[in-house]
Image (cartoon, rainbow, N blue to C red; front, side):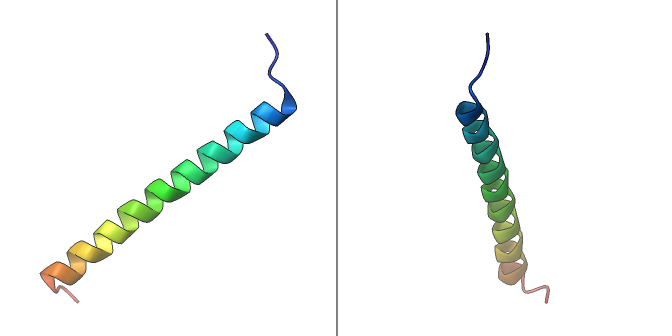
Amino acid sequence: MTISLGMFTILIWVSIIGSALLMLTIFGYFIYELRKNKIW
């Protein structure tokens, strides 16, 4: 069972974009919580 190069590239890009979106969501929520609690 072989996976074509295009499919493999798409899977890599999906994982990269997915992880980036996840980190951005967590980072944004963290900043939102800080501003809501007025720590800084």
